Image (cartoon, rainbow over all chains, first blue to last red; front, side):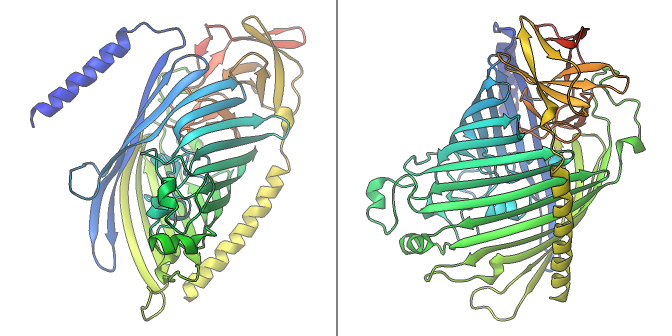
Length: 401
Length: 147
């Protein structure tokens, strides 16, 4: 076992030597980056507490030429993967080639994160408030939602708007699970079925310090071999057994204040057939939304730092800028907003969350977070009593570079 | 239940206020922020004066695969910034009072300074020169500096 670190160091050294020594064109460049975070969570009512290195992600990008580049992110969750034990995952979060067509248009091909919602593309620890990603963008929009396919990204200068459209593999309805809507049906690039396909699109408009976006997804969920689909009461084909998702969001910054709003709806019209086939209590629809207000406690002008690099000084690095933010967020989601005749309503999936907390960055790319989340839900199936209240205290630290 | 109802009502009120502010902000959208330049060898020529209030204009030129920002400083001097993220070399979009990267969320101000990581280096500045009623941006292999 003691040989493992030295072996790893040898491999990394060889990679660095190979990267350094190979002949490269003027435009060729390899970039490294990454991010990660660890959290402590205490459920106040039961006293249960846990601590976890949630994720460490290594980003490797390579520019082959002025118009062609590679983006890849390798993620390890929960620090350790051991055969036969639950928890832990190593997965590529992104791995795609980007072709620049012109200054305003590009095509990506491979495993990528479609532009759906706020967090799916941008989810580095310092990019969102609170230790946990929002519940709505975890269970209604199953971020981080990556699939295999090709996407076209562009900017229209006349309107002006940013837009994207992508064709990716569809979902696997047999993997849908009670309590997570479509989340477990993602293939995430692993042996994905190409029998089912999906289209996603987004359009976003920015003006001043406001940005508004709408996005959508429509795809088939019969991601099984045709011979198997034929034996089941679901519709096969590229867009058979469809799943539709619509989303709208807005982000506004005004001085020290920033606001985020998001609303989303998932529709699964063939949920009854899915339940007949796979007995996974799939809902006909699910919906959610949140509103978040944040206040920047340390404005750049509050703490001018002589070490901060500016364009005018041309110094090496601007990481010394401190930051602190307080925020409050209200989330509302119902993972069984409507059910087919063969569905069973679960009140615990009808949820309200109130999250309040703060973050402090001693350096720009390090963030320390503390927050409290109050969760209210309905009663479980067959359960007596009404609303259930649970409180979570979460402390965490994150980094990005 | 009353507490939850209060929170829901307060949030709906905030949503209404936010929507109003948003529609007012978006109604001020400015397509004149984008200007077209002419690629001439290793330089791009942009006619002056620049339209709209600025201070930042996005420049695109047929045949040149990058987007450039022309920023008019408070002293009236025009600077050119290459809109490529200095973190992962991804193209940037104009957003708010600066530029942002959709890949990892880095943001830069109109002077090219990093205002949100993970990028750590300012945007590359390209050399410019005023020639008559045009600004000429040099886009060859030797930009003036990493700002």
